[in-house]
Amino acid sequence: MGLLERAKEFIAAKSLTPKQFEQIVGLSNGAFSKLSDSTRRSTVDRISNAFPELNVSWLINGEGDMLNKNVSDTSIGKNKNEKNDTRPRIPYDAAAGTLTETIEGVTEYQCEEVPVISAFPHYDFTIRVVGRSMEPEYFAGDEVACLKVNEKRFLQWGRVHVLDTTQGVVIKRIYDDGDCITCRSYNPEFPDFSIPKEDIRSYNLVVGSLRL
Image (cartoon, rainbow, N blue to C red; front, side, top):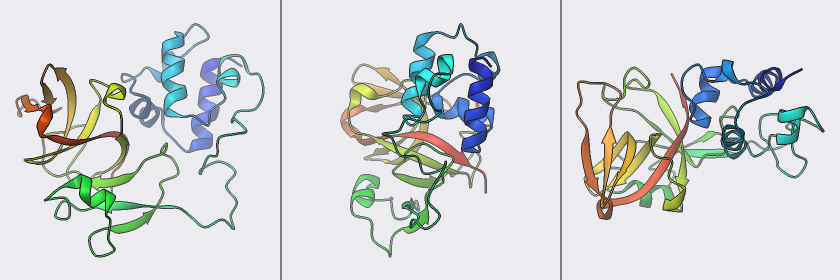
């Protein structure tokens, strides 16, 4: 069994599709099927960062168990008697003032607490997509799971983030542009635009999506 076969075994255990795996790790479309024993270490590191519960030694050469013993995972081997964790679902009207304050001060009135989506890696909240700018990857009504990026040096340029800005909440692929962040849509009908970094309250990496 090679690296690709072990990766297939892992995503089957996580109930993920290859496309979802690629989105979570930040790989290009079709990259999953090209995984092999000669895959670059940098790619393996990206997989490990996205799925800390995955035993890298097992992925590379089949040594040990699939999962690390010291990292809990909510989707594989979960105790059925254990109470399910929840995460807030942030509606846009609750986040109209500031998404950051809403997340940090979630109230029952503002946000619905929903069970953790076990197929995704760790995330802090979900929010639904509005508008057409991110089609065909994300459609209006899709729910995206987001991980708060606490250190700006960990930003992953080119990946989709939900930004809490002084002008509102936006979901875009982001790129560094000096004192600004360039925001790019998937839909070519929507042009790029820039946001001054000082106007961004928080960065939240999209780690998964669900079409409802």
